[in-house]
Length: 241
Image (cartoon, rainbow, N blue to C red):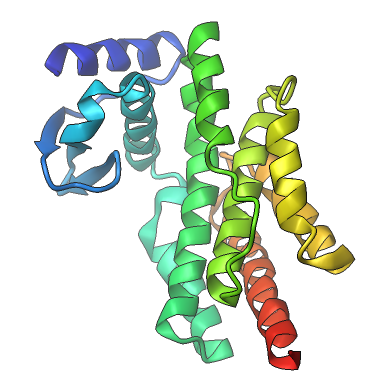
Protein backbone atom coordinates (compact mmCIF):
# COMPACT_ATOMS: atom_id res chain seq x y z
CA UNK A 1 0.00 0.00 0.00
CA UNK A 2 2.87 2.38 0.77
CA UNK A 3 4.13 1.91 -2.79
CA UNK A 4 0.77 2.95 -4.24
CA UNK A 5 0.69 5.99 -1.95
CA UNK A 6 4.16 7.08 -3.09
CA UNK A 7 3.08 6.59 -6.71
CA UNK A 8 0.11 8.91 -6.12
CA UNK A 9 2.25 11.51 -4.32
CA UNK A 10 4.70 11.53 -7.24
CA UNK A 11 1.82 11.89 -9.70
CA UNK A 12 0.62 14.91 -7.74
CA UNK A 13 4.09 16.43 -7.63
CA UNK A 14 4.64 15.94 -11.36
CA UNK A 15 1.31 17.64 -12.06
CA UNK A 16 2.43 20.67 -10.01
CA UNK A 17 0.70 19.86 -6.71
CA UNK A 18 3.38 18.78 -4.21
CA UNK A 19 2.37 17.46 -0.80
CA UNK A 20 4.70 18.73 1.93
CA UNK A 21 3.13 17.02 4.95
CA UNK A 22 3.62 13.43 5.99
CA UNK A 23 0.70 11.26 4.88
CA UNK A 24 -0.05 7.76 6.15
CA UNK A 25 -2.61 5.17 5.01
CA UNK A 26 -4.79 2.96 7.18
CA UNK A 27 -7.11 0.15 6.08
CA UNK A 28 -10.52 -0.15 7.75
CA UNK A 29 -12.25 -3.54 7.26
CA UNK A 30 -15.62 -2.11 8.35
CA UNK A 31 -15.67 1.06 6.23
CA UNK A 32 -18.65 1.23 3.83
CA UNK A 33 -17.41 4.09 1.64
CA UNK A 34 -14.20 3.74 -0.39
CA UNK A 35 -12.17 6.06 1.81
CA UNK A 36 -11.62 9.47 3.32
CA UNK A 37 -8.82 11.77 4.48
CA UNK A 38 -8.47 12.80 8.09
CA UNK A 39 -6.40 15.68 9.47
CA UNK A 40 -5.59 15.93 13.17
CA UNK A 41 -3.07 18.51 14.34
CA UNK A 42 -1.44 18.57 10.91
CA UNK A 43 -1.14 14.78 10.71
CA UNK A 44 -2.82 13.50 7.55
CA UNK A 45 -4.23 9.97 7.38
CA UNK A 46 -6.02 8.42 4.42
CA UNK A 47 -8.38 5.68 5.54
CA UNK A 48 -9.21 3.08 2.87
CA UNK A 49 -11.95 0.45 3.00
CA UNK A 50 -10.55 -3.06 2.83
CA UNK A 51 -12.90 -3.93 -0.03
CA UNK A 52 -11.56 -0.97 -2.05
CA UNK A 53 -8.01 -2.34 -2.13
CA UNK A 54 -8.87 -4.48 -5.16
CA UNK A 55 -10.71 -1.72 -7.01
CA UNK A 56 -9.37 -0.41 -10.31
CA UNK A 57 -10.17 3.04 -8.90
CA UNK A 58 -7.77 2.69 -5.95
CA UNK A 59 -5.17 4.95 -7.58
CA UNK A 60 -7.81 7.56 -8.36
CA UNK A 61 -9.09 7.37 -4.79
CA UNK A 62 -5.62 8.05 -3.39
CA UNK A 63 -5.18 10.98 -5.78
CA UNK A 64 -8.57 12.33 -4.69
CA UNK A 65 -7.78 12.11 -0.99
CA UNK A 66 -4.31 13.59 -1.53
CA UNK A 67 -5.97 16.51 -3.33
CA UNK A 68 -8.01 17.09 -0.17
CA UNK A 69 -4.74 17.06 1.79
CA UNK A 70 -3.25 19.57 -0.67
CA UNK A 71 -6.14 22.01 -0.27
CA UNK A 72 -6.08 21.57 3.51
CA UNK A 73 -2.36 22.38 3.53
CA UNK A 74 -2.95 25.47 1.41
CA UNK A 75 -5.79 26.69 3.61
CA UNK A 76 -8.23 26.84 0.70
CA UNK A 77 -11.60 28.36 1.58
CA UNK A 78 -13.31 25.15 0.40
CA UNK A 79 -11.40 23.27 3.10
CA UNK A 80 -11.88 25.74 5.94
CA UNK A 81 -14.46 24.05 8.16
CA UNK A 82 -15.22 27.28 10.03
CA UNK A 83 -16.64 28.88 6.86
CA UNK A 84 -18.67 25.83 5.91
CA UNK A 85 -20.09 25.36 9.41
CA UNK A 86 -21.04 29.04 9.64
CA UNK A 87 -22.77 29.19 6.25
CA UNK A 88 -24.76 25.97 6.66
CA UNK A 89 -25.52 26.79 10.28
CA UNK A 90 -26.82 30.25 9.34
CA UNK A 91 -29.06 28.83 6.60
CA UNK A 92 -30.33 26.03 8.86
CA UNK A 93 -31.20 28.51 11.61
CA UNK A 94 -32.78 31.00 9.20
CA UNK A 95 -34.99 28.34 7.62
CA UNK A 96 -35.66 26.25 10.73
CA UNK A 97 -34.28 23.11 9.04
CA UNK A 98 -34.56 19.70 10.61
CA UNK A 99 -31.64 17.27 10.90
CA UNK A 100 -32.28 15.51 7.57
CA UNK A 101 -32.58 18.79 5.68
CA UNK A 102 -29.35 20.09 7.21
CA UNK A 103 -27.64 16.80 6.34
CA UNK A 104 -28.75 17.23 2.71
CA UNK A 105 -26.99 20.60 2.60
CA UNK A 106 -23.81 19.05 4.03
CA UNK A 107 -24.02 16.33 1.39
CA UNK A 108 -24.41 18.96 -1.34
CA UNK A 109 -21.38 20.82 0.01
CA UNK A 110 -19.30 17.64 -0.26
CA UNK A 111 -20.02 17.58 -4.00
CA UNK A 112 -18.83 21.17 -4.32
CA UNK A 113 -15.66 20.40 -2.38
CA UNK A 114 -15.05 17.23 -4.39
CA UNK A 115 -15.46 18.85 -7.79
CA UNK A 116 -12.84 21.40 -6.77
CA UNK A 117 -10.31 18.82 -5.57
CA UNK A 118 -10.91 16.64 -8.63
CA UNK A 119 -9.35 19.32 -10.82
CA UNK A 120 -6.07 18.11 -9.33
CA UNK A 121 -7.02 14.46 -9.79
CA UNK A 122 -7.82 14.84 -13.49
CA UNK A 123 -4.64 16.86 -14.03
CA UNK A 124 -2.73 13.89 -12.59
CA UNK A 125 -4.50 11.19 -14.62
CA UNK A 126 -3.51 9.35 -17.76
CA UNK A 127 -5.90 8.90 -20.68
CA UNK A 128 -6.81 5.36 -19.59
CA UNK A 129 -7.53 6.57 -16.06
CA UNK A 130 -9.82 9.28 -17.42
CA UNK A 131 -11.82 6.58 -19.21
CA UNK A 132 -12.16 4.74 -15.91
CA UNK A 133 -13.39 7.97 -14.32
CA UNK A 134 -16.05 8.33 -17.03
CA UNK A 135 -17.44 4.90 -16.14
CA UNK A 136 -17.21 5.71 -12.44
CA UNK A 137 -19.27 8.89 -12.73
CA UNK A 138 -21.78 7.27 -15.10
CA UNK A 139 -22.66 4.84 -12.31
CA UNK A 140 -23.51 7.76 -10.01
CA UNK A 141 -26.53 8.87 -12.02
CA UNK A 142 -29.99 7.95 -10.76
CA UNK A 143 -32.86 7.70 -13.24
CA UNK A 144 -35.94 7.64 -11.00
CA UNK A 145 -36.89 9.74 -7.95
CA UNK A 146 -38.00 7.97 -4.78
CA UNK A 147 -40.85 10.27 -3.75
CA UNK A 148 -38.95 11.46 -0.67
CA UNK A 149 -38.36 15.20 -1.27
CA UNK A 150 -35.13 15.35 0.73
CA UNK A 151 -33.64 12.19 -0.74
CA UNK A 152 -34.70 13.20 -4.26
CA UNK A 153 -33.03 16.59 -3.90
CA UNK A 154 -29.87 14.78 -2.80
CA UNK A 155 -30.06 12.46 -5.82
CA UNK A 156 -30.64 15.36 -8.21
CA UNK A 157 -27.57 17.19 -6.88
CA UNK A 158 -25.54 13.98 -7.19
CA UNK A 159 -26.64 13.65 -10.82
CA UNK A 160 -25.60 17.27 -11.39
CA UNK A 161 -22.23 16.60 -9.76
CA UNK A 162 -21.56 13.52 -11.93
CA UNK A 163 -22.44 15.30 -15.17
CA UNK A 164 -20.66 18.53 -14.20
CA UNK A 165 -17.55 16.53 -13.28
CA UNK A 166 -17.24 15.25 -16.85
CA UNK A 167 -18.38 18.45 -18.57
CA UNK A 168 -15.86 20.46 -16.56
CA UNK A 169 -13.07 18.34 -18.07
CA UNK A 170 -14.49 17.98 -21.59
CA UNK A 171 -15.25 14.27 -21.12
CA UNK A 172 -18.92 14.03 -22.14
CA UNK A 173 -18.25 12.51 -25.57
CA UNK A 174 -19.83 9.06 -25.74
CA UNK A 175 -21.80 9.55 -22.50
CA UNK A 176 -25.25 9.67 -24.10
CA UNK A 177 -26.58 6.87 -21.86
CA UNK A 178 -25.59 8.86 -18.79
CA UNK A 179 -27.44 11.93 -20.07
CA UNK A 180 -30.46 9.80 -20.96
CA UNK A 181 -30.64 8.39 -17.43
CA UNK A 182 -30.56 11.88 -16.00
CA UNK A 183 -33.21 12.97 -18.50
CA UNK A 184 -35.52 10.21 -17.24
CA UNK A 185 -34.91 11.38 -13.67
CA UNK A 186 -35.72 14.99 -14.55
CA UNK A 187 -38.86 13.97 -16.45
CA UNK A 188 -40.55 13.54 -13.05
CA UNK A 189 -39.85 17.17 -12.13
CA UNK A 190 -41.30 19.23 -14.96
CA UNK A 191 -39.76 22.29 -16.56
CA UNK A 192 -39.03 24.16 -13.33
CA UNK A 193 -37.14 21.16 -11.97
CA UNK A 194 -35.02 20.96 -15.10
CA UNK A 195 -34.19 24.66 -14.80
CA UNK A 196 -33.15 24.16 -11.18
CA UNK A 197 -31.00 21.20 -12.19
CA UNK A 198 -29.32 23.29 -14.88
CA UNK A 199 -28.49 25.99 -12.32
CA UNK A 200 -26.95 23.47 -9.91
CA UNK A 201 -24.98 21.72 -12.66
CA UNK A 202 -23.73 25.03 -14.08
CA UNK A 203 -22.67 26.18 -10.62
CA UNK A 204 -20.68 22.99 -10.03
CA UNK A 205 -19.19 23.02 -13.50
CA UNK A 206 -17.82 26.54 -13.04
CA UNK A 207 -16.89 26.44 -9.32
CA UNK A 208 -13.49 28.00 -8.67
CA UNK A 209 -10.69 26.49 -6.62
CA UNK A 210 -9.16 29.93 -6.02
CA UNK A 211 -12.18 31.57 -4.37
CA UNK A 212 -11.09 33.64 -1.38
CA UNK A 213 -13.05 33.49 1.86
CA UNK A 214 -15.58 36.21 1.01
CA UNK A 215 -16.26 34.90 -2.51
CA UNK A 216 -16.49 31.31 -1.32
CA UNK A 217 -18.89 32.27 1.45
CA UNK A 218 -21.17 34.03 -1.05
CA UNK A 219 -20.95 31.14 -3.52
CA UNK A 220 -21.67 28.51 -0.88
CA UNK A 221 -24.65 30.47 0.45
CA UNK A 222 -26.09 30.73 -3.07
CA UNK A 223 -25.50 27.04 -3.69
CA UNK A 224 -27.13 25.74 -0.51
CA UNK A 225 -30.08 28.04 -1.18
CA UNK A 226 -30.45 26.32 -4.58
CA UNK A 227 -30.47 22.92 -2.90
CA UNK A 228 -32.92 24.09 -0.25
CA UNK A 229 -35.18 25.36 -3.04
CA UNK A 230 -35.20 21.86 -4.55
CA UNK A 231 -36.28 20.36 -1.24
CA UNK A 232 -39.00 22.95 -0.69
CA UNK A 233 -40.41 22.69 -4.21
CA UNK A 234 -40.52 18.91 -4.17
CA UNK A 235 -42.06 18.91 -0.70
CA UNK A 236 -44.70 21.37 -1.95
CA UNK A 237 -45.60 19.11 -4.87
CA UNK A 238 -45.93 16.18 -2.50
CA UNK A 239 -48.24 18.17 -0.22
CA UNK A 240 -50.56 18.90 -3.18
CA UNK A 241 -51.12 15.21 -3.91
